[in-house]
Length: 594
Image (tube, rainbow, N blue to C red; front, side, top):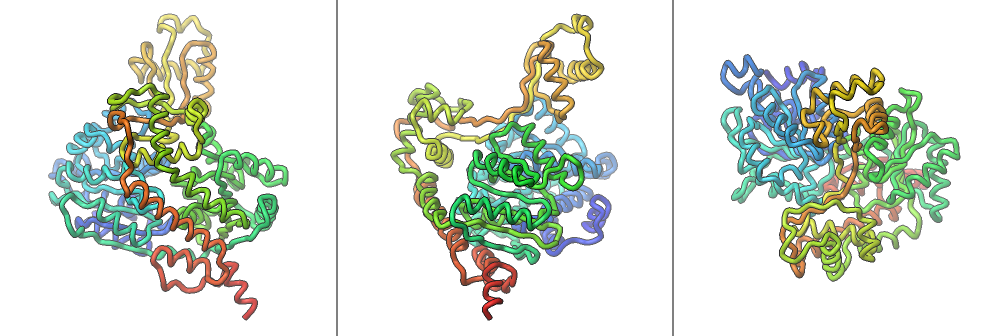
């Protein structure tokens, strides 16, 4: 099967978008490849098509007849929602795909891996944290992997705005993989990102390369990040109240779906309430909401204009938006100044994916520049304070010096700060820095799958007057989960709203114990507790300086009135020859005075 045939057969497209075919051909030829593409540029097809092609041409005659070929793409992504969406979409196209994520039972994980080893599976989605397990990496060596796709690849670079140490394990995975079933060649890597400066792009290639490769031989494709239909505007405001007035005015003038980004969770609810009072159909979203509520609110926003319960505006923190491909977003409005041009560019890139005119509006008040300076202190607190947090965290969990290695704890950050008399923001940052330095693994707001145990012996169930829905669900649970009468079992299927309500009704009658899907922080000691922590220069000083530079760049973007805003953003990402947009507030002002 050729790439063109796979594109038409499975995805219904007659031609590739610009640069997609070149990336696909580079991957099929076995080249390690970095693709720098704008948000909404069709990155997924760049690893889906070559996987289908390589698998169709791999294996002996019997393999191709029985399994349609042999080949599996390992997709590394930090987004559980994206994993689930892409697996579902691939299955709708009769392409076998699976995902392993936090909360799945060990038995279910092994079942998925068995399917990938012996069945006609083409895609396995995992989080970067999953690769930290040596046992998991060993199991991967038995899978017929023909490609490793790394989504959000900027996370592997210490110079990136969203560095995640777990991404560094991808290079370890490469060392343990068997040769690709396609032409028996080393397994290539395709790294994909929509936000990378030239320095970050070089760092991605270096850190993902095979060990000992002094000059990484990567094929790099860079598509312009320019979005011709997106108009960038900065609105100067007197204060927060003025920001709110201008926000309402913008939403009344620019119809269609909108995203409003704010810095903290409390403000999402406050702004949402104001918008609703002004007659604007809005809801709010942040990572502190339970998984069911977040999923429901996200779906209602996506359903605007399609379903009667659809919501036009979502007021949210930056926890919202990753992996969402809603094409008709007409405006993305930032109520607060983001930390970096990378974050701003990625978030505004969710507007206008249908190619029609859309707006990226930043509301900026004079006091915002001062707030940015405080963010540096909150994000990189003094090293003495980080030492104090480490000691108090260990005391909080009763972990003595020399112990704790490998132990995991559920962390309620507010309670830690209350009991140990610590400031919340700086403590949160200190935990991430301790993670980056390798003393702990701090996993923030990760989801656990719902769990169920049946409390009533099977022979007594007939004495309960169950509804048809309750009876059907009980029969399904008993059939699928053999240990459900003795232990809490993770539910690996999607819990729908109706199913959730049925489980709740059974729990209220004490027929079952039901623990819904939850969101929690965890801390795992990656080495025994030590007396004194030491942060390497690359973890603290160098990253602090890089953070300061990003804040300066973002503040300059908001305050300057001389340069085209699109040009200024693109030059940050290394595009120095972009033409004037003619649409931003700076260009419009110059046009009026000329």
